[in-house]
Image (cartoon, rainbow, N blue to C red; front, side, top):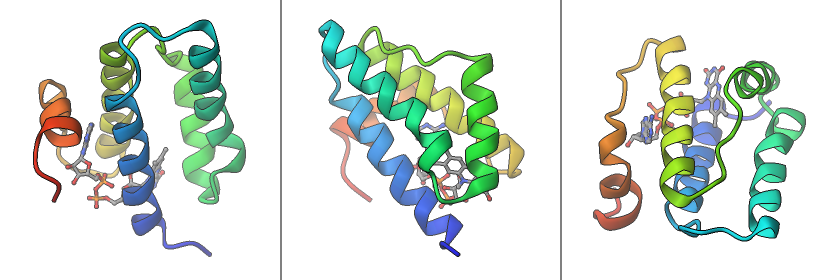
Length: 106
Ligand code: FAD
């Protein structure tokens, strides 16, 4: 089975970084592709219970692929939902760019 923690860190890094560099004004094709990427996760993600819960969450709160800022915020909120579930600290979504775009890598 996959290392759920390492897989999670790698996946969040990929998703938040991708959102941080997503266009301010995405074309319909760019939106459709991002939506497909997010909607694929509940199907392909190899931590099956993570995938099932994430699938339910994105039904409750539809992915907002309308802009870079909107997508970054939506993803931050999704990550916070998982943080809460796991008893981790919530992340301040105002700091998303600092962490994933402008700031130093960790
Ligand atoms: P991570 O949560 O991996 O975070 C990595 C870094 O992201 C942090 O160091 C911080 O700098 C930054 N960060 C934290 N919160 C936010 C935020 N809200 N917005 C932006 N940046 C942030 N694990 C389970 O055990 N059970 C699950 O059900 C589960 N579901 C998951 C679902 C998905 C879709 C994903 C991608 C992962 C899931 N995981 C799950 C893994 C889990 O979320 C963590 O990745 C893992 O526990 C490692 O945690 P971590 O403390 O190293 O930091």
